[in-house]
Figure (cartoon, rainbow, N blue to C red):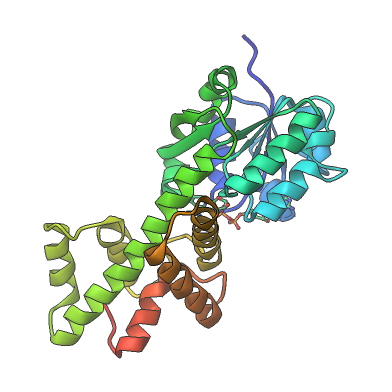
Length: 297
Ligand code: NAD
């Protein structure tokens, strides 16, 4: 069976390596990004460059998007020169963290043009995108899941959350709120230990052998806080967006989210102090600043 031709819009930290993996797997790829340099690099590896999202959807069967914010995903999908206006593609699969409300709106807009939406947010960071080991949280009708599965298996492990638009996004927001909370709370615990006189590396090793271990203590602190590099690879602005979407969704559902609201405020402060492009491990830098210690090993 001939492989589907795929469009890829958004060639950033996550999208670029994911697009590369599709090329390596032998898919014909049409790419688009406002950053022409990223397009040029992939063109050298065999991808075709597009001029608009409509152009991508005119030339391919399935369009994948990896974009920063819900309003950008929505524009790329539904604007006059967007995916919905394209003549060939029948499926738009979004690997961005877009939130359930935008997912439902975009799904509706695409359905009006006879196209199918798949939300497929991912977890596992840049390393997961490069190695094809991402967790993929997919919501779409069962038959569409079977169609896209062979393609997205190149990115990692797809789990079909359900058929309704936005369900994958709900799971992703919950996960990212927890991941951000882990950075914040680990920073508080570590700052206390270091200020009391415990060596940061000794403290982290003990936590990682004990019941307090978490994704930040196991991964983010050894890689980006103890060396003082604050460069794990996930932007503060994106983490803030995710936790904001998470708290908004819980409010819409009538579920109190006290801890999540606190994490949202910590991210708001981190963003105003270090900028939206700073790494989200800068939450630890903020706690260092407030505590008057550095968590280094
Ligand atoms: P990024 O900012 O590195 O990449 C986004 C890309 O989209 C950039 O190359 C940008 O130029 C491009 N872009 C922006 N507007 C555009 C438009 N209108 N048309 C075409 N291209 C456009 O972001 P990222 O870290 O790759 O994240 C992408 C998405 O994946 C986000 O929704 C993020 O929340 C999610 N995500 C990121 C990570 C991570 O670790 N970085 C992990 C999981 C999920």
